[in-house]
Structures are given as structure tokens and as C-alpha cells.
Length: 533
Image 1 (cartoon, rainbow, N blue to C red):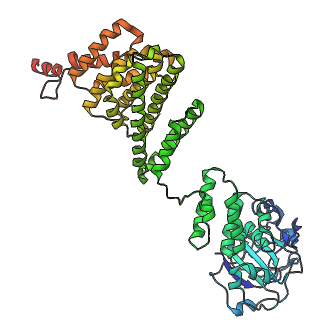
Image 2: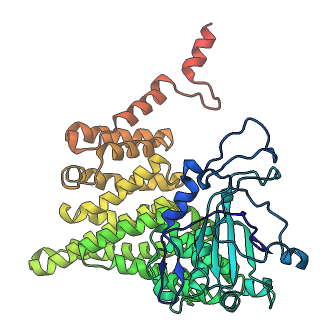
């Protein structure tokens, strides 16, 4: 809390400048706009600057000074606390509103010679029984004419600091006031009966400043009004929300009831995060409205991507992954069931109204699996998905019996797995990679022409690089077997087959140009060259 000192205004201590103010229905002369403070702090009148003197001040020499050129002294900060009774009653008994023109000045200390901004008087003149002077940064000062009974009634701070009986017309000085403008406004709110009506026109940032000063003054009714305001008003952006929460949490440590505000950002329900995430995924996965499902999949994926680091540290990532894999299992079972129905001999004889729901179900489940795989890849937890997908031999065997228009989305899942392995996003074991290629590479090649021309999200170069890199992670014998099979198909199909020439070149060099000797780390080409030398 800023330092408080009881004293009286000495004659010639400050210079007061009147500013535009207005009288509220409660009778308090309210503060001017913030521009007035900023104008006095940032752009003081150049005429108020003292004229340079060639020599030290001399009390014997007299010069005429106008009010606009008078130097303003700065009060010297003192130690925190209230001064003694002797200090309280020292000084003049008569308060001064406007400092007279001074023709002589006595030598002052170095701190008193610092420039001081003009003071601004608030409060209806002649009605108060005490003065409050706020000394802010850079010597900026504000003097308020107030009533002791109002301050003591509304502020526990002033009730503790002010004695019951004050002699004469006292002046309370508060040094090093951080926010003079808000301090004045908060004192003015003590005169208001309806604080909510005065706060409703403010923004969140300003109310937070008022809340801070009200907390320092122990202005409990204002604190409650600020909390009511913050509980009801929207918070714009994460930065503003963080400021509100930090301010409210500070009050919580002091025993002030802030639960209504914190309920906006924290939940005390008994539902665990797993149930909530599972419910969200279920709603998205089972949605039949294409546009809404597509947009919410994008939103959820973005949010999970943003929170990846946070969820990993808090343990929520494991809960999320378990829920996702449960959904993956359900989607795969539903997809396999749809494939079985569509591959049956009697399916072709059914009417179109019966076929369409099954075809749509296949497309929906395949799209859901692609989305779930994307989430797992973002959280580096897709290795188990590769194992699950590589073991779907029945689904792969039924693939050729399904019309390509209904099955091509399944090949998108395979392509995404190859891309993930090629980029190092998932690291399944050798047996899983080998089984994945053995089970799903042929169905992917069968759908490759359709994927290039009928799937806008398909990136040919990226997929081909992923397939090639996946093949090159296998032992040489497996590389040779797969690439020779690809070569025969590529020579027949051309662009309707993945172009794996880069992988083929790497395999060729490993086999014929730089073959490694068994049991050694030196290529055979280098070893033979060394022996000839």
C-alpha cells in the first residue's frame, strides 16, 4: 500500500489548477476524463518550467516571478506508516486552496528542488472537512476535498489510519500512489449509492484497476460491485481473461468470496475429463450433418493440437488417447460390418434406397478413422493405430469387392499411415511396417487413379515419398521384393500407379553401387578399392 502521512498544507506548498468537473446526483464532484491526467503528466505547460539560473539561489536577491514560471517543489518520500502526533499538528492551521505568487524562496534540499506537476483540486470547495493529497509518479499531485465520515465508513484502511478526532482542517498525504486517476475515482465511488450503475459504463481493464485500489483501501462494497461486474460482463481474448482470473485469485487468498467469477473458468462437477472427451467425440463421430461434422472436426483437432504440450504435462493426453482408441475400435468394427454387407452377393440385387445408407456409412466411418488417426499423429500416439490397421486382413480382402466410389476413403487412411511413417511421426516396429505394406499397398495402388482425380485433399508427391520411405525402412530382401512388384505394375499402369522411382534408386545403389559387406561397416566398393591399392 502507498505511504500515508497526516499533515497540513503549508502556504505556497502546491499550486492548484482548476479542471473541468461535473457534479453527480450524489453531490460528489466527479473526476475529469483520463485525458486531463495524461495531459498534466505527459505534456505539461512549457511555461511552467523554471528559468535557468546562472548561480545558486540567493535569499538576499529578489526577483519577480509569475505563477506560470514558479518552480514546484516535490515532497520527499518518507518511511511507510503514520507520522507521530507532533508531526500531525505541526504547520499552519489554515488550509490553502491556491498558492500565492512568491517573490522569495529559501534554499531547499536537493529532493525538494525536483520539478513538480501542478495539482488538481477535486471535491466541492468548502464542504469537506479534510483534504486528501495523492502524490503520484514524477511528482504529479492531486488534492481532493473529502469528508472524513464517508472515508471511514467505506474504507477500512482510512478507518484504521485516521484518528477519531482530527484537530483543525487536516490533510492526508499518500506518497508514491501508483494509479492516481483510479485512486481518485475509487474515492469518488464512496459517495455513490448505486455503484453498479457507475461501473456498467466502464471496460474490464478499468474495472480491474478500480478493484485493485478498492482492495488496497478495504472498500468492500466496491470490491463486491467489481466482482459482480466481472461475473456478468464478457471477457475479450485470452489476455483479458488471464488478467481477470489472476486478479480474482489474489482476492481469494484474502478470504473474499470470488466463486461466482471463477465458476466461469473452473468446474466443480464430478464428471471426469475422460467422460467429457468421450461424449464430445461421440457427438462428432455420429453426426449425420456433413458440414457441421466437418467444421467441428477441424475445431477439435485444432484445440487438441494447441493443448498438446499442456495435456502431456497434466496427464490428460493419456486419457484422451485411451478414449480415441476406443472410438477407433468402434469405427473399425462398424466399417468392417458395412464392408461385409456391401460385399455380399445379394447386395447388388437390392434397391438403391437400401444401398445408399450402407455406402454412406462406409464413407462416414472411413472419414472418422482418418480424423482419429490425425489426432493420434498430432499427439505422437499413432503407433498402436498402425498395428490395428495392419491386422485388418479381412477388411483388405473385401476391399476389391466394393465399388471404388465407396471404398476410396479407406485408402486415404493407408496413405496417411505411410506419410506418417515416412516423416517419422509414428514409429511402428519392423513387423508392423512389413505387414502394413503386405496388407494395404495393393489396395492403395488399385485406388490410386481415383485418389488423384477424385480426392481434393490427396497430395500425390507427399504420399509417394511416404510409401518409398516406408519401404526403405525394411530389410534389403523385403525392399527388393516390394519394389520389383511395384516396377512390374508401374510399367503397365504408369501414372495410375504410385511413382516410387526415388525409393527404387536408393535400393539400386544399396544393392549394386555401394553394397555393404556382411559383418562390416565398409561398403564393398570402398573395400575393393582399398585392396587394389
